[in-house]
Image (cartoon, rainbow, N blue to C red; front, side, top):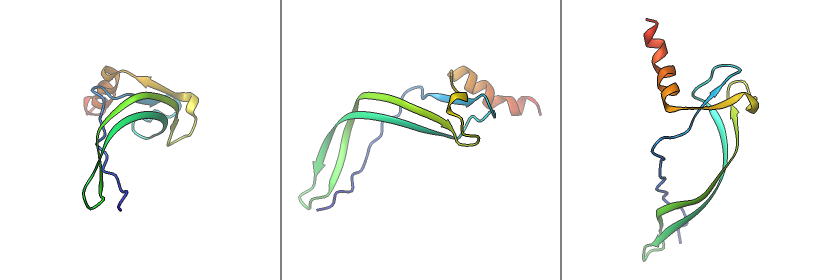
Length: 94
């Protein structure tokens, strides 16, 4: 029997964005989370598993660490507006 699940991950409507205040990184972070989920497990007659309808019941953010310079204390959560401005800033300077 195969136990390789196919996960349908639900992406939040407005995902959390981060910025490292030490180096300015906006794109690379190690995010450690603990999630408690409820899922519908569907097995075929042949024993293959497909995981469907995953619902996140509890989600705890444990840490966010900058991939470039390392310190987790320097990482801050930014708003969608700030992320959009940061993404547009290189083209504004051209």
